[in-house]
Length: 275
Image (tube, rainbow, N blue to C red; front, side):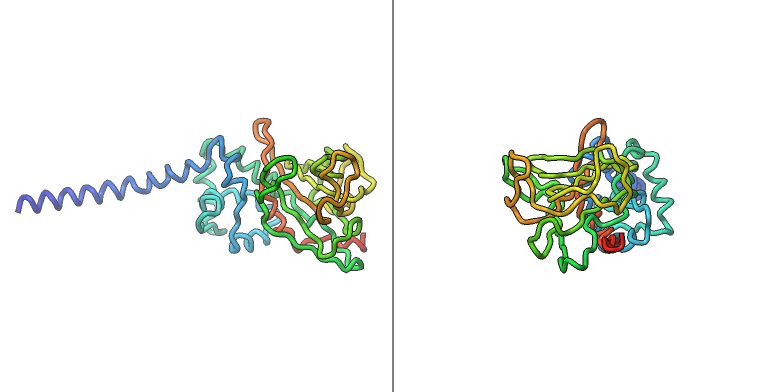
C-alpha cells in the first residue's frame, strides 16, 4: 500500500511540474526564434507564407507587422499559427519585449509596407502575359556555383524591349547602369529602407541616379541583357525580369525571397496604356 502511495505521489508531482514547466519550456524554445542572427537565417530569408495568411494580408495595406508576428508564431511558416484580429494584439505583446524585436519588426516592415504594384505593367496591346515561380536558391552557375537570390518573371513570348517594368514602391534610384550578372539594372531604395533590384532590362526610361520615383513609374523595358563583360551583351538567356529584394542589418546586405511579395501584389498591375 505504501509503495502504491509513493508511486501515486511521484506521478502526481511529475504531472504537477510538467504542467508548470512545459509552457515555460515551450515559450523559451519559441523565443529563441528571435535573436541577433534571425534576419540572416535561412528561415527568415525564405519568407514562407501559407495560403490562409496570404489571403489575410491581401486585405492589409501594410502587412509587415502582421507577418512579423505570424512568422514568430509559426516558426517562420513551418507550421500553422492562429494569428487573427482577435488575438493579434496579445500575440504582439508576447514578442515586443523580446531582445531584437525592434530591428526585426523594422526589417519586416521595410520589405512589405512599401509594396504597391507588380513590377511588370499590363500592356494588353503586346499580347504578352507573364508568369513566375518560387525559384529561391535554385542553382546558378555563371561565374561560379551559387544560389538564385531572386525571382524571375517570365513572358510567354521571348520578345525584348516590349513589356514595361515599373517601380513596385516609392523611393530613390540608388543605382543605374551595367552589371555583368544583372545587365542593365536599376536599384531603388524604398522609404522603409529595403532595396529593390530590377535586372536584365533592355532599355531605360528617362531616369537617373538620385531621382525620386513613385510606385508605378516606368523604369524601362524587359530584356535579356547580362552575362557578359562587354556592356550591352544580350541573348545569353531568355527575356525576363529578375527581381531581387535586400535589407541591411548592422551594415550587412541580406537578400530575401521576393516570391511571396510578388504574390501579394500580383493583381495590382499598372495599366501602361493609361499612364
